Length: 416
Image 1: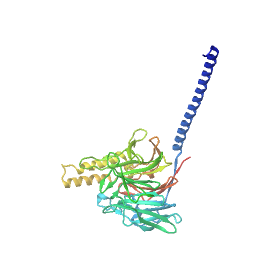
Image 2: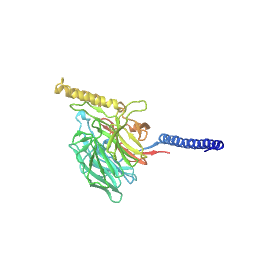
Image 3: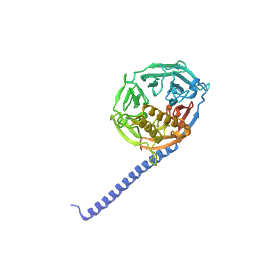
Image 4: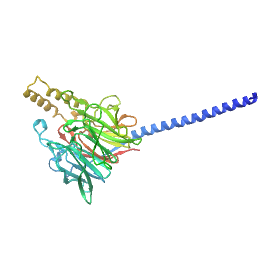
């Protein structure tokens, strides 16, 4: 039995103990909260303090019709050596005027010592619309198309000043791909969307260059097939996450044209896709990254450069889709209406097309968009991007439909 005195002591001790525990818990909670707030402030500050250093390269050394610039070229940045290969343009007339799209096979090196471009080799065939991804011992140039057909070819690219350029065969894709997206993280390489065997596709292929001898097909991404999308990869909790942005579907006999504005994430570990965001600004205005290019930063952020204007692009391809399927028109009338439409659309000044001047930054942790930088020189589609945040290059591309830029920009992400 506990006597009255002992009960008083027991109650006093109990109250003291409870108060001590509460004080301890309060301190712990405050400590945790302070860490959360500090981390949040640090991350916000980190994002806001990112800046970009931009330097334009000379166009000296570009010869012939390459002086007019190309889009959809292959490229590589190996030991600070920038290589650019292939690509295409309309050197004479625009397509609606009967102009011919020309594909190139030249492989160029930007010679920093001489501050000019020089030709150092040729592709096996003139090509464009493939992808270029870094791997631990070089780069891969994957797929694409020529003037007559789509490609499944894949080449490993290596370069040293002593040995020069080496282009060797790498396991080919399971089928021809063009106008698709590709990315790598370490030895893992992903390609997604585009035209697969000539048809708009949801397909995704993967290869680990360190262990695999052939490509593997992963789960198709959801919704609509996507041509000219963008992909980037990061790692999170020992899992590789592939992010898919942008792209469009041109329409067929059963489905009208569509612009993809969903951000999809694929978990390599779980082998499934998940919708994580929409391509929209802070004021809920949709944009598209169709024809853009992307770079992962700090294994968290994805910086996206260029791309077409969402409303203008979808309106245009929808108008042309309906002209092509208007049964009230004769073949001759349809041809004339299509020509008249393109004659107006293709001959507007560059500013009319409103390509994205913003470098949109996607935070893979918060799933939020922000604008890292806004530059008129970012407003291009079909550019090629290679490198790392410490040094990367935005290479040529379209200023407007049918018109290329010969300018290449060296960029660096600066963060405190």
